Length: 75
Image (cartoon, rainbow, N blue to C red; front, side, top):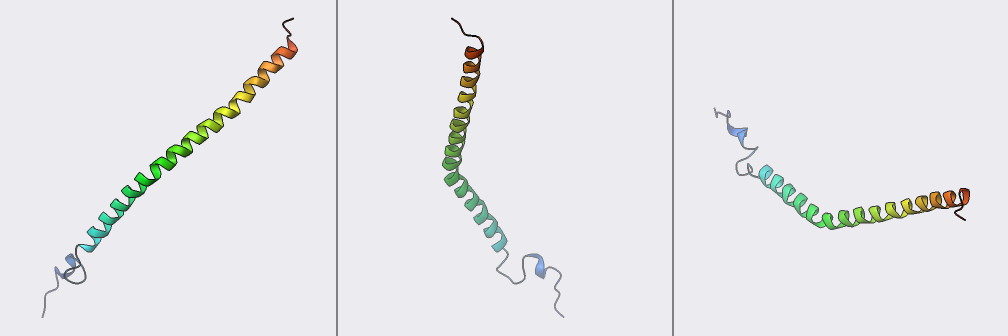
């Protein structure tokens, strides 16, 4: 009889024990590459959202100034 106590410790057949490590390394490299490629896009989106948000805040300030000038004229 063949003893199979440690046979499946490294994989179903000999020679495939490094495949999970390779796939994990491939996933890490892929995620690092994706983050490098996506970082300028996310920075651009963040900048556009800030610009749009500040543009919306300005008219509200102008409206309050107009209301105060209409209600309390200086002359």
